[in-house]
Length: 249
Image (cartoon, rainbow, N blue to C red):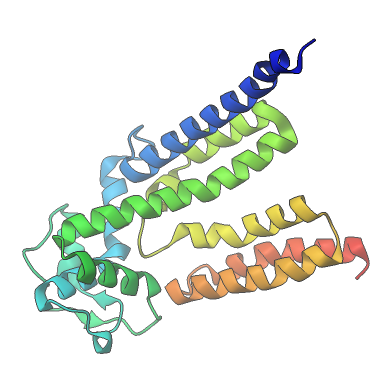
């Protein structure tokens, strides 16, 4: 049989898999960003966002009101007024006067949002909406790394079950777009550890690669906040320790 005649048969399954993964990504993104399938109540969806992200929101409004980014003002700003406004699903006209520098952490996500606001000078509500969409896409992207790996390892059924579990997980839907929690960075160290060993096998070179990657990602999450740092560190540590013991290093 002519090789050219067999190519469509070989290519079509790959195209089908890619189309399916794109569809899963779209479902994840839409539900994480908008709670489109009402995985949680809309009140709960809005309130979870408000009580923490107000720290980042206030910074965007501060830059909008002042016209520039002032590093001396910190990268996260605590405002009870902003929190109340967000819970009520409203946005103030300008930066509330009660904003105080939040000094408990560096606040990389606040710095990036403030820079975005300074560069494009959009209305803060628009800036925050775009940033939330990007964060939701990042969360969906990290989950897709897991799903694609499960598809290779366990086949379509296992990947399909995982897709449903991720798409309709209340915690993922509530927090996946949140600019304060930066959920992708909580998941990414363990996911990358898995992918590195999947690609390289349980060898010493994989361990030497995984260790600095995990350390770098943990450090990046630390710049965005210290919450859940124990889980963040222990997840990859367990995987690294298991491979270390398996390889007899």
